[in-house]
Length: 509
Image 1 (tube, helix red, strand yellow):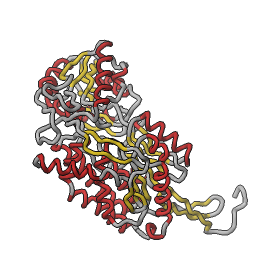
Image 2 (spheres, rainbow, N blue to C red):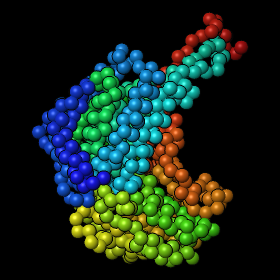
Image 3 (cartoon, helix red, strand yellow):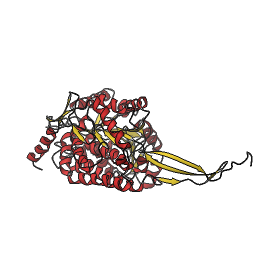
Image 4 (tube, helix red, strand yellow):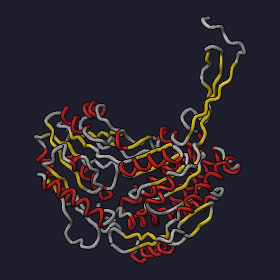
């Protein structure tokens, strides 16, 4: 794509700044009187100005979603009709893949070579899976019978799975379409209605997706959009008519979201809150073959991924070799303009975030850490919020930086003396979202079974799959997304029971 075409995408984003709120099937101007400026992390230019929604508009969006959920029109959409809607959205995303990927490269700074697949292709795959699930229903189907029960009378029971209601969907900025697709796809497939609040740093991309959603011909109020910051989020997640909150973000904000929902309607919460994922390189692994995937998994998307393998555990006899090889590999990684096809690592999301990360790193260095490979700022990039991928060495496993999700292309190398110690270090975290083990399958499988993690890949796995659940224990969150377990989150279970015999047996018979 030429620079003029890229500028055209940016210009389109700028023109959408006032009609930023979508309620009851109609675009509205954000009425808060305030605006949000979107600054490109790579060029530092303002690429969009969005009028944010008022608190009254938040209320109106929830009212609209509640009315639509109860309406005969939306309830007339059966599994086949809901499947068609979700599938059509996937088709529309596919038609707009290049413009969406280019916009994400500008707004979120994912390099374009990765953005097409990770940022747009992934959501398409997830939506098509949810379209199939709309037809199939949750595990066991939308309704199934229990076995007959005889205590004290013979009775029959049906379990009926019904949509949970109004869903407040709050995706994070790092994967704005992916996370929106996970929440919106599941909600629509189940028959829920939705109010979406994107991260301010992913607003332009979400607005473009909503232009596509507007083409679905949904009944008014089934899908709504509000934009804004913490006050808008607080109003939405604490609204008494919200039945479920689906949030992706930090554990600190997730705790607030859960609290706000409890105070509002005691709503159900599904929270995906990040991780500090261990990557164990077993002594029997091919060390040279582990270096590139280890670095790329904490550096891709500038490290702004909740499942980044940010703690690399290497046997003490091999860690120096690993760091030496990693340093050489990092020098081959192009850090630069995310619009260029050969860029591997772009900038982090903002100047403030880069400064925070650099402060954490410097404090760790002051406590005795050092750069074992790469690190610092890349040469020749004076504009943009860039960090060079790096690995900190000499870090105590209990040091704060070994327990803090940096959201940056920075890993930590931790030596271990034996596999038992590696497992102990790996599990010594408040998070439990993801983990990886490199080594022969039989050995790696045994270690994987000992890790406290929602997902464990062996030798890198083979990529995200929509039919597998995503989430983890501890401060990684509550509930699951994707997979049958994630789809089940969008339902309430109703038990219908009736007697088959009218006479109650006497006690003791």
